[in-house]
Length: 280
Length: 292
Image (cartoon, rainbow over all chains, first blue to last red; front, side, top):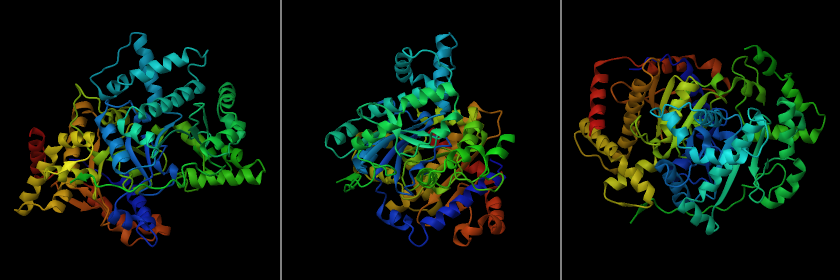
């Protein structure tokens, strides 16, 4: 059996104590969430990365349903992973969420590892597919093919941060497109009761980026970008980074998604009533 | 951690980048980001100082610099491990799926994201604590109970997924009958199922560790978030669950780190699992479930 010192796990107990005080105390919403059940507006596909907690949305308990949280935040399309398909089905058809999001993030170790493994394969270094991680990465072949197609048109910069950023953004676009292969999502979008989003958490610059569906470009959700933080990156990459995200485009973008600076476009959407999971 | 000393104070270089522009409107927006977009995740545990946002430290260290525990939790919006335990950024590697269900580890097949993610955490991030994190009032378990009672289930994928784990439902029922010498009603069965799902997943996690990482000391825990009771219960070697602490009912949140020594001692006591005769019984029961 396990032998645990408990030293590290104490911190979790402390965290739970804070959670208890905040959400079970006066004005806390947990008692109601327990008696009435959850009714989240949002469902988010997120990466397991420890630096992108679901608390980035500050919705508290009951706010965001997370149908699939695993390395890389990749939704590989309908029919590939039953767990993900079931989670989306539950979120969209049963909980009637209004928004389905994929939240990728820069500095993603899984995406870096995936690209590295695939490039090794091209050089003849074969992964050990008896292990779950290489197997999972191998199953992401369609995504890698798409990345190759895109990045063959880019010159140089293969190992730099800018390259990685483009791959991460592409992963969010890919997952976002794949959402529509799920019948529940396609039907709900068609009926106008679900909106899908692709987001990227830029923890380095302190920004949350959202994809403009018409241009496929990622732009800050909040208009607070400070060019001074960009020099954290190498100058060349910083230039590419800025060139791809001109902040003067934000005004046009916010009209598209209907948000004002500092206000999320995800607010103010009416909830739907929720049917019972059990039929008859 | 030489870099740490330069980045975790208010005077750090990158904090200056955020605040030294002398534009009040800009500062206000940055504060909004710190408190709204990334709330309560950037307090420095090492030096005790608080800083709102220091991305450079996290980028430099990478998540491997801090991660020590993996949580396999449920998709439920009320039971996200990142919300329930309020970990610091970089501490916790959570994976989630409906019902926190974990299929058996099979290194020869399957495309289950969960095992790939667990392997990533153990092999590449050095995670040494794996926590199976279930919760009460679970919709997936409710569906499983309904299915066992013969009700039709909305949703073709949910149906297939729940059919795959009907063995857990049978195990839960058997466990309850052994304990109480009677059949459970629907509510009792759901609670028994929520508990048994954790037992089975813990067993599967241990099987994974033994098969893939026999040379590493990896600890596997089974925890349940009891939503009604507002507590966290930990799986004990005899297969029962015990609250890890009564802490939430009597601590002063504002003085938690300094005033909870007694509570912390209790946590230590309840989290030190020891080999005993019961553990062999539990292992045998879980093996029987797996075999079935």
